[in-house]
Length: 326
View (cartoon, rainbow, N blue to C red):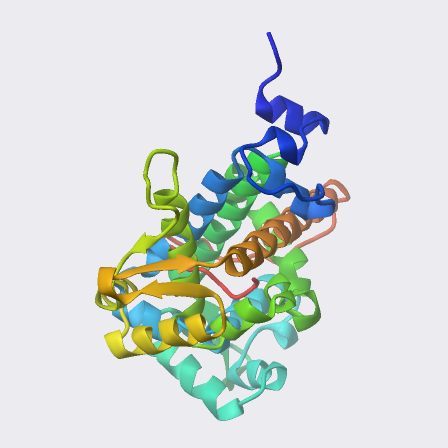
């Protein structure tokens, strides 16, 4: 019996010409080699869908976390809280402001997070003037789900351990993974910022979520026998309702994406087509993104074997929230 495409790919014998591709290109190296896997389109589509799913039709959440700055603030809060080894390292408004630009905006957004119960405040027992910021269930379990999605996708494309279950059952491992992800908050290490088109989209309200939605739908509608050629059948009104933002905002963003060469529009038939340049940027970002998170899990596993101590974090209940480590 001949080996399956997955077996051939894992052994390194499957080349681009063995796949149903119209254009011959060199085989990628490093994380981008995952693009050659026969299941890559399905896994990428699943990833794009699941990153956006928690925010669909959630106007409050998309308003809070539709841009990088707010999600970065939330990521800093949970990172500091999880990795703190002493009260002096726990997050406060002032300490978060010291890490990020725009102190007034940071304080205003933290106030919103507290108002919606996404973050709580805890007084220092020795000094009531000090209030620590404590991430609630939306952040804690949302980050867990976000990490587990990355682990699952990497496992499907590159093999190795799927650490998602361990992430849910081993609290020490969860804390170590979060600590090992700290380097991804450094702009020099963020995979997204290596792709100017995606970084530009992420500066716009819901821009990255729109990009992921278009790529996921294009992949789904480009399946054999669909006859769509990857065109996304969706009007600006449909996309606006799905992402919880205004139709005019989506329309302006679509026009700007077309001017930038990221999509083509067929306004008469209310459909959009991501360009090759756009799709390839998303594919490459995805490969480096899941590889970076998988590397963090491997480092966390080794740290646990070494018996290195980690900070404790109170248990939380379950919901979903994607954070800004992309």
